[in-house]
Image 1 (cartoon, one colour):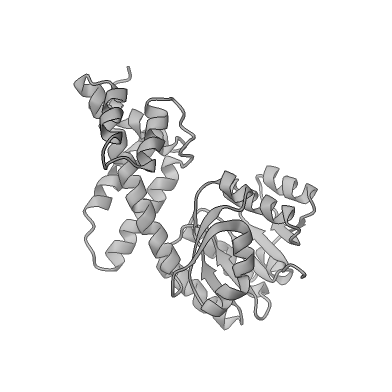
Image 2: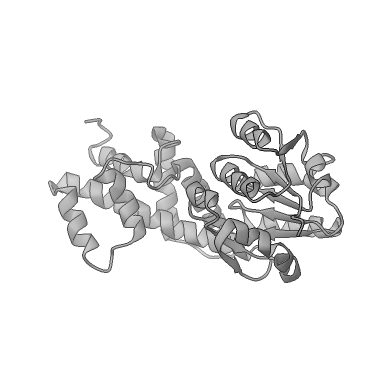
Length: 299
């Protein structure tokens, strides 16, 4: 069976891994020019075609995939004379794999529908290494007929593929998921820093906490840096965590809900971002809290 032509926008760590997976499986792939050339050149070397605008990419594709950083970045590539929507084929499907604002997703969906195509949101769980193996968690939502149409492609990319209901539901669940994850991560990072302040060995704290119901994968991600010195087991930057928790907080405000917990997590991430932790991994928030408890002094 002939595989659908895929256009991919956003060849960062995750997007590049997804493209490599599709090239492994023989998908016809088109990518877009980008100032960071490394991953684009890697895809071209394996047979991907390159175009200069999102519109050209959409004109060549049955499925358009986006894996970019913010809702603003998605909107910039979808709208306008040279945007994806202007080039979409009748019956095509566009999929946002990033973590975006649900309200923005729904607005884009309306514009895509008016162009005779369908828009799905499908935020991702797991890491680029999982993407290379086709073992992502994919939280898709939107029109069920369109979902079923692209499901075989999603199953080539993901081990667990969910359909979660109306458009925007995937992004809503992803934001709740990331809010919880980053809140737990910050709590564990502060716990290790408080152990330092109180003169308790980090290993002793971990041994006790991990022996009971508090034990979790997120605890182990933070422990990997706090005790083992490896920040990349949780390869998620502070700037991205701040963005996601900020989106969650904004979503709550839009719904008229006064979120207490997200304010604390967002404040910590904003302060860390402002104090030089922008590109450091979330597990390194241990250092942010430790320095804060010392009154801002370096050791």
